[in-house]
Image (tube, rainbow, N blue to C red; front, side, top):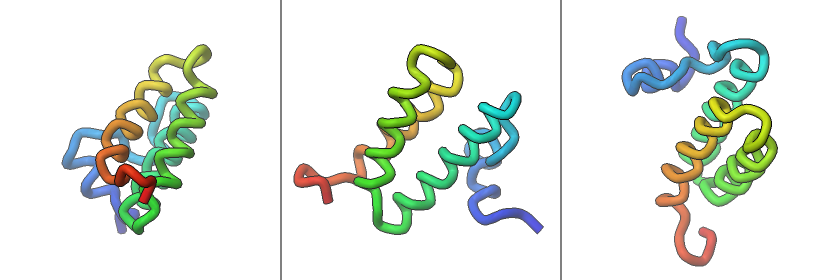
Length: 85
C-alpha cells in the first residue's frame, strides 16, 4: 500500500518522501511532502513560512536539500494571497 501523496511525487519525478540521500535528505523529503500536504489542506501561508525557515537553515550547509525547499517555496507562494491568506 502506498502512502498518501506518493503517487503524485513519483509521477512528477520528485523524490518519494523519506527516500533522499542520507538522513538529512530523507528528512528533507519527508518535510517537503508534509509542507505540500499542509498547503493542500488550506494552510499555504504556514507551509510557506516553514519552507522559508528550512531554506534559511539549509542555505549554507546543504545546497541540494536547500534547493528542494526553494522550489517548494516558489511553488507554494503562488497559493498565498497578497494579504497572506
